[in-house]
Image (cartoon, rainbow over all chains, first blue to last red; front, top):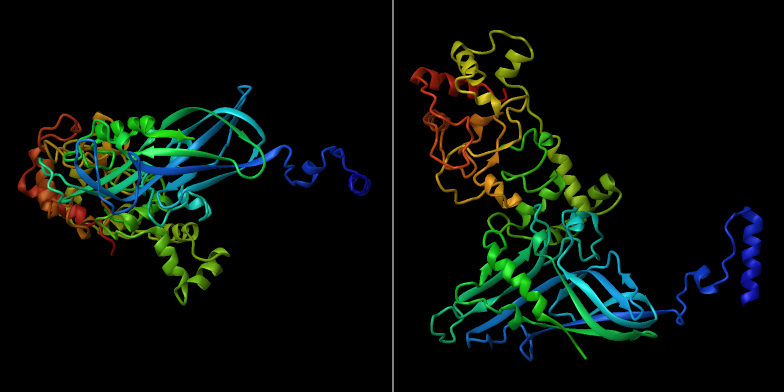
Length: 254
Length: 225
C-alpha cells in the first residue's frame, strides 16, 4: 500500500513538475486521520439545580426556599483551550458551542491523542467575534441567527446566556410562580474565562469531559424575588454578578 | 426618522446601535415591541412561499437564507432616495422663485447663527449624523447613545435625524413625544430642559412668532414634490 502511494505521488510530481515534496506520512497526505495520533473529544454539559438535573417546567427551590422553574436555558462556550500534560496549550480556534439544556453532547472534532492536564473556555463570545454580522455564517454555525434568538440585533452582539422561567416573588413564598425569570446576559465586558484542572486523555473515538452547570451557584447572592430580570443594560450590576457567578457554577464531574 | 436616503447613514437606529443596513434587519423582526418574531422563522416562511425562492435564486444564485434576506432588504433600502423638494429646486436647480418669501426667511434663520439649526442639521441630508442631547428631558427614560457606549457622557444623546420630508414624519423626537413641527420649534426656542449633557447649542432663541412660522414653512419646503 505504502509503495503504491509513493509511486502515485512520484507520478503526480512528474506530471505537474511540482516543487512540493512527497510527504512521508501517508495519513497526512490523504487527509485521513491516523487514529494513532488523532482522537475525538466531546464536551457534555448537564444543567442542575443542586443535585437535580434541570427539567423544563419542573419546580425547584433556591437556597432560600423560594420556588422557581426554568423554561429556557442556553449559553455560548467559546475560546476553548486544551492543556497537554507537558504544559503545551492547544487552542480550538473558531470552535463555538451553543449549549442548549435539551442537548447534552457537543463534539469538538479531531484532537491530538495524549494526556491532558487541564482546559479552559470562555462563557460568551470574544469582542472580535461579538460584533460581526450573524448572517455571514451558515445556518449550521452556532454564531448564525438562531430559531431561539441569541443575538440582540444591534451592536451589543450575542446574548451569552439566556435564562427564562418563573419564580414565586412573594416575600413569604406561597408556591405561586407569579413572577418571570428573564436573564439575557451579554456584552464584551461580561465574558468570563474559566480554568479547569482536570487530568484526562484522548485515545480513539470516545473521549468525554463532563461539565456540570449548577444554576444555584449562579443565583449566589441574588434575590430572585427582586432580581429575576435583567437584559444586561440597564441593570448592568445584576448582569455582572450573574456573569461572575459562572466561575462558581461550572465544574467538571468525574 | 425617515428611511429615505438611509444609504448615507453611517450607522442605524437613534442610538447608532447597528453598524450596517444588513445587521439592522434582525432588530425590527425580533424586537418584542415590533414584530416579536425571529430571523430564521422569516427565512423558513420565505422558503415555503410559492414565489420568493425563485426570485432569491435569480438575484443571489441561492435561496432565502439569513444572508440573502438581510442583503435583499438592505439593498432595497439603498434605492430609497429623495432630493426633489422646493428647497432642492431653489438651491440646486437655481430656481429663485421656488421658495416663498416666508420660506426664504425661514431658510436664513435655519442657516443663521441665531438659531444655529444647520450646525447639526447641515449638509445635503440636513444631518451631520452625530449624537446629541437636545434637552428634551431632565431625566431620560431611554439612555440613548449611552446604551451602546455605556458612557455617562452619552446619556440622552440620540442621532440627529435628517429633516428631508420632515413635515411628513410626525410625531417628532426620538420617542415621538412632540406632535407638530410648531411644537418642535417651540422646544428649541425655549432652550429645552436643564440636562447635564445638553448640547451647548440648545439655549433660548427668542424668536418672534413670525420667525417661528417662517422656520416651520422652510422645513415644510423640504418635502419632496
